Image (tube, rainbow, N blue to C red; front, top):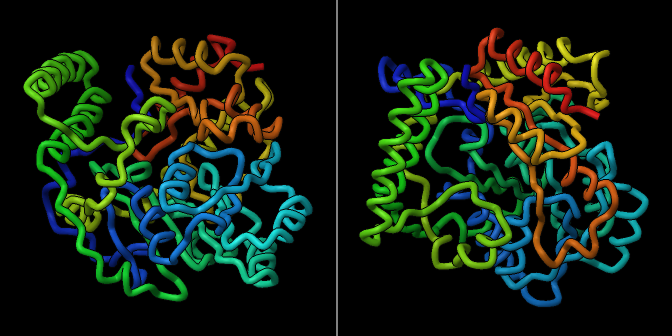
Length: 385
């Protein structure tokens, strides 16, 4: 059995009529800009706000590195606050850091769970700070009945983490709408990058239906990719957050690229209510299978949370991931590294997550049989603490 880490691009999305329900938030927000990747939205937001050296953004020490790179590339300075074992900040520490008059607070909603927005909003109002919500891992989640991304002055979404689109970052302006962003002229992304990623998403779905057929097609696709690279055909990547790529692959010149027209078309084809419902069902089924048999992350799946993955704490993340991949389970090693300069300022809890947090797939394409299979392999392999 093969269980992909991301939902696939199914043939059914290309037939029939688009959804009649209308697009939910954030797609229904009045002031939005679509980019090829989310980091572009972070960079251009801070540029439009006039951030420069000396203007500080408070950033969590547990991060992917991409968002810090974009903030630094805009010219702003960064100061880190610690994330605790419950994946929330120490509010007392954060309050003390705010006394140094930072200009903005950057908040990440981890794995779909909301941060304590009431307290963070109050702190930003008290200090006159800009509040930026990072919803890259939280598309479809709510807090107190309101969608994440609607609380801050601005919000960033990474669409392809939750829905099967080949690219897509979205910047929302809730307050203080900036004309520089509304009137941006973005370059059209190249067709080779879009087609290549679409093929990967389609083959992932095929492989989940028939591993033999999918593997054969993937081999052919990889051979074609190597041939294109050998003749110098460049593709815009999505999702690469390794330190090597941060130093060599990120280019400000590549940020001025818009989301592909195909993504706009596909966004009208998804049932977002069903996606959230399926993810919650799979998460709860996985928890039911594992509860009482291994230590689990002690955080309730509150009403309105659309979980991105099922978090699993393991002694050795790389060993566990390899073992699961060998059984056909595409587990994700979440954020092994952050931005290089931040390492010396990381707290023990951020370091713990980097060393031990593994993500198990529970996305909307998974069947109950696949969830059972993943849970059984976790127990059989005895990967947990």
